Image 1 (spheres, rainbow, N blue to C red):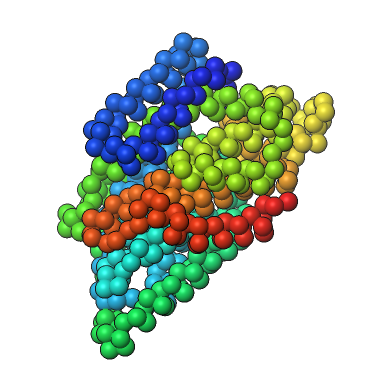
Image 2: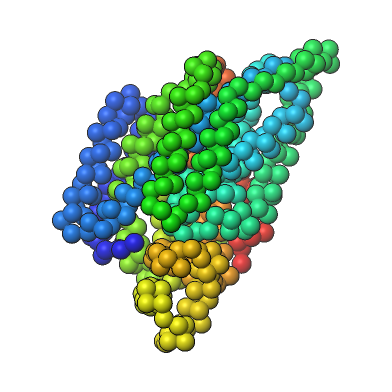
Length: 471
């Protein structure tokens, strides 16, 4: 991807858009609901006009391709998950609840946190309806809507952006599973302690009556086939737009073959994905100056530490959408650690098929290591000479274990901290909206932070930092 030395004032539309996304639903939701499309497209239009004036048509096209891949992926998972309905009767025991949340955390890596949240929040409310409280909703958001989805690029939108930028699919799983075990395990343990106390408040005869006839039923399981198509399509890279065509076909197949009763039971509608599509179109457009400015000026800030990347990306992901936060920090990492001249030399090596013995300069060892990483993770693209600049930059980082830790830091920071507020990640507000619609008590914005984020998320985030990122 080409980058341009942009005027820093052009970052303002990006900041304004993120501020509106975070605050408008809280303070003037009626106006925002009516006019968010016009506002978002207006801010995006300012940036697109600026880049057209610069003659940066290649930059616009590259961003458009990334947006198209991103929204097709998110939208197809949303449609397929909306075609699966889980019916559950009876009251769940604390152990059954923990098992359900654990399954949800695993499912988040297959359906995405949005898909898993939309699929599981309604049965979660039904199975706990006789004693459900705010912590049932918030811990569901913590585990299923956020922390659980850090194992694959499918799991959370920022990780799919990383995959599009060149982070290998299985590298995320291999590197992040220990953090996932600790994060999810600690939250489940805290939930279990709360739920046991809540559960034993009911008299024994009441508990036995409510838990003695649990019955599960799954409708729309044919959509598992369409889910498999989407997952397999993720790995297609060589043929342009085939991945997206398969995902769209799977979404269409799911939508038109799912019985209306299933969609009605799930209260399925396209409004949530429409809002995501509009806002992310504006985000992708307005964030171009921010990314380009970071690429050209990141080295002026010195070398960051893993702690700074983890805490910085996490802090912003707590109050802004975690996908653009991840992208901005990963761009800053590549700008800081990757030698631009060496990237150009690697491109030339790939294009000409020259032998590694012909390379020269101050970074010979790093170039050889980067080529080895590309051969390991992108052999088909390397053979076809279609490896792009972003893949080379990520390979450069992966070739250096100390630099690779920065990718892990921004991955965990963006995904885990997105749970800290209702506005940190898209599914958070969607889950709250469904719970409110079903008359379940949910905490307010500040109550969420002080009653749940600080006593539950904060200790887990500190433990993860201590174990993985403090050095």
